Structure formats: C-alpha cells, structure tokens
Amino acid sequence: MTAGADWCYKSQVSCDCNCKGPDKWKDVEPACGGQSQSPINIVTQKVAKNNLNLFKFHGYQHSFSSIITNNGHTVRVNLSGDAVIEGAGLKDKYKAVEIHFHWGKNGGPGSEHTIDGEQYPMEMHIVHIKETYSSVLEASKDRTGLAVLGFLYQESDSANQKYESIINALPQIRIPDNKTTIKSVSLEMLIPSQDLLKRYFRYSGSLTTPDCAESVIWTVFESTIPLSKQQLSAFSALQFENGTAMTDTFRPVQPRNGREVTYSGGNTASFSTVLTVSTLIITFLTL
Image (tube, rainbow, N blue to C red; front, side, top):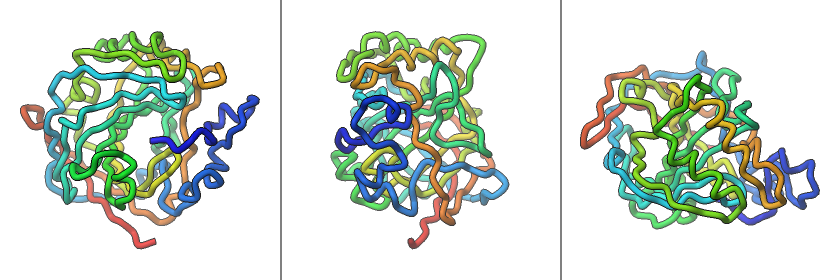
C-alpha cells in the first residue's frame, strides 16, 4: 500500500533522506490532499449511533503460516484472502489480504487514529478488498473497494503470548526488504476477545499512506489490545532504508471535513465457525 520511494514519515524528514514528509505527501500524490483523508480524530461526543445487522467474519479462526516483511515503511504480513468479512452494511464480501502496523518510539504514542485526542502506542490494520479484485491497487480505484479494520493497543504489565510469533520474528526483519515466516497464527488470536468486540466506530476515508486513495470503509474498534512495554518497543528496533530507527510510523490525523462517524452501541458477539460482531452504519458524503 505504498506508492514509490519519495514519501516518508515525519521522523525521517530531519535526516539526510531525500523524501517528503506527511505535510507534503500531496506533492507526491495529489489524492493525499483530498477531502476524505485518513486517519482522523474520533470525537465520541459527536458520533451517531446506528442499527445495522451483524458483521460476519469467516475464516478468522483458521491458523495460517505467512511471510512477514520489513518493507521500509512498516511491518507487513501477507494474507491469502481466505478470511472474509461481510454484512454490516457492506454490499459485497471483502477478503483479508494484509496486516500492517503503525507505532511510535519505544512504546510512546504511535497510533494513526486517535479517540478524543488520545493517541495510543500502536495500531494494527487488517486490510480487506472486495472479493472481485486481485490487489489493493485495483481495489483502490473503487470508492468502496477496501474495508480496513483498525485495532488500537495499550501497554500492559505482562506480555501478550498470542503475539510472540510476530515479536520473535522482528529481529530477523530488522533491515528493509528482509522477510521471514511466521507460523500457527490466526486473525482471531490477534484481535480482542469476543466480548470486547461490541463497540467500534465507522466512517469513510482513505489509505493512510500514498497513494492515499479515498476508497476505504473504516472500522476502528474501541477496545484495545494489550502488549507489554518490551513487545511494543521491539518494533522500534527495526530500521528505515537509511539505517535509522523505524519509529513514529504514523500519519497525523486529517480534517474530518463534515464526514459522519457512527458508533456501535454493542450487541453481543460470538466466535464459532463464523465470528459475528455488531457494527456501525457508514454514511458516504457527496464531496
């Protein structure tokens, strides 16, 4: 989900890198200056409730092995597309094709979305595209081509054992373009438990890196995922292309520009062969 090597994060601008930081991404890709950009600050006092049907997750409980990569901007895990989401106001089925992360420095503020101005240590995006498409690039040409699930993290006193396969792989991908294999992981084990998937926010937005395509149905969960200080800090040991520490890999929040953000009040959720959670309505504005 990147477009060329001319863009970078704010943490890289102060070095000798010949790149453009977030405030100049529109010079790299004009869409980055659009009116429906992501991430945003979610103001809970201004969200609207909704009454949509359940959000169905197929295959989230299935264990998989996959390639995990340092792509020079983030940690990315490739997914096969076997896990699918539907319902919840989505007119199509969407298949999971990628996981990636955004983080701060040694466990400091690093999430992309903020809630009432609070920035969390890290954020995970599970990227889905319509089943009819074969790539994120192809899906990004469709206004509703992608559905991304955003999960926020909080520092905990103890390590989250469910993340050990990912954390243990990080030293092997410290250098950009390095990759390795993670095994026996499921999407279900990486996200909050069933009773914590009742409340989340929904809005229409964009990819958070160039080309910043405004083609994303965003869902940001209110419940957080616990990781220890050591686990969070492990991501900061990775390196950018120039050898500096890969830290503060987030885009600053963007103007909401009148977009409606809706909120799920939280019906019951349950994991089985199909994982179901209550969801939010998405209101698309004519811009």
